[in-house]
Amino acid sequence: MLGRSLVANDDEPRHFTSGVMVYDYLRHGLSTNPIRFAESFVARYPEVQIGRWPPAYYAVQAVFYFVAGATVPSAQILSMLTAVGLVLLVFLRVKPGCGAAIAIAAVSVFLAAPLIQYAAWEVMSDLLTGFFVFLAVLAFSDMLECPSCWKPATWFALWSVLAILTKGSAWALGPFGILAPILARRFRSLRSPWYWGALCVIVLFGAPFYLIAQKYGIGYRAHYAHYINPGVIQPPERFVRLRPLLEFAPWLLLIAGSLGMVESLWARWKRRDNFAWTTLSIVCATWILAQLVFLFVLPLTREPRVLMPSLAPLVVLMARFMASIATLLKRPATDGSPVVRSIFSLIPLIIACLLILSCGMVPLLHTQGYHQAAHAIPYPAEGALILMALDPDLDAALIADRLSHEPRHRDLILRADHIFAQMDPEQGYYQAVFSRPEEIRSYLLQMPVRFVVLSRPSPRFPYQQLMEEAVVGDPQDFQLTAQFSIIDPLNGNQLFRVYENPAGRDHRPSVVHIPVGPQAGFRTLDYLWQ
Image (cartoon, rainbow, N blue to C red):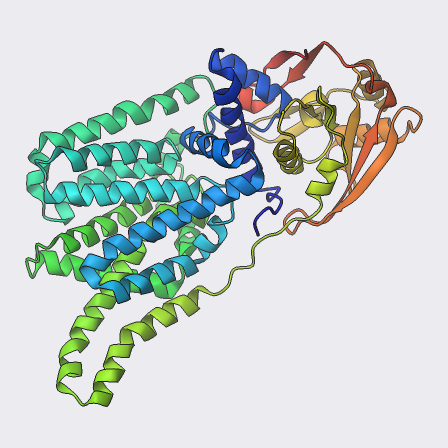
């Protein structure tokens, strides 16, 4: 589904817009104040979410855009390349412990997993978080095998910081780093200065972004005290919140991974198996447990994709389970007839096929019409002044499509919910600023706004109804130039209508006062349109 429109009520459009802002800063803004540059970009494309989300994903996007261009298909190619990178890591680490056949089966199951089928086409940060976390897990396993070596500790610190600065759920690496040496029976690692130095580096470089974002009120609205307080969210409710997350993998894969986890712990604690492959298996198991505990204590989301970083470790454990089955069947297969040997040798392959079939085919969400709607508005060299009176999620998808097809990024896009409404950030309630459509029409004409985008069915909020009456009720000043059907499986079908104010073709304001909403602290920015 390369090049498809981004899903409107997901975070894809906001991730893409944020990455384009970093790309533009690296191209044109390195000599300017980054805060001022960000404010200018947010004023024109009000869907930037850096602050709410960490910056590492957007930095990786920006670097990739220098090679592939700042377009939606480029962002999707980046996701596919990240998935390929994870596949290679899984194969290279499973092969020494289980052999090439089981390694191929493991990566096949990994690629068939529903989360990967979704993520490989999405512009989301979860896959990159999983990539960095798996690298950190692999480095930590190497560090436990050689606690006096500085290289594994350095790599663990680097990959952990990158993971944390990609998504906040990677802070589960904290409890993971404490628990893994204990479960792996590598107690001498706890006496290594490299181990403690790596943990200090992770906190030193990972925490400042989150502290600054919370200080300035632009961070993710996570009331940690509310979550931690046992009197607020009781344990039964916490388990209810955790249950949907366990859908991140098919039940058969979860069972195989769990059995691999039990077998690796049994091998280390009962059989005194000290092989590096067993250490890696236990470290993978520890990460999965640490992330589940982290999300139990801080139930920040119910979306299974937050457990994307646990998928590759789960597949490693599944491979260990398959290797254990192959080992158990090896002697009967050797002693038996050729037919028996053939049947026993096929059992691991049969298990792999069953795991792949349990994943099934995932229908990817596909939206249609956003490209046409974005192209219905011309791309003048100086940019266009556009006001969108859509639902916020639809605004984000249309803005992303507009950015993807306008390489100069000179549009000035206003959101009606910022201009004509005031929102209670806690309740999400919109209160109209104006009471009559004539007031809105006067605002649009005085600026003047050249293009207005409206949607049907009927508006959800009072300010949208006033916008409808102000624009549609004045055909002399606002002329319908295009309309497109938007086929959106999540939001339902919409009819986008583009109206043009002819007076805005030859005149544009020199200064625009723009309320930018919660991502900039509900401030008003003065944008100088040169």
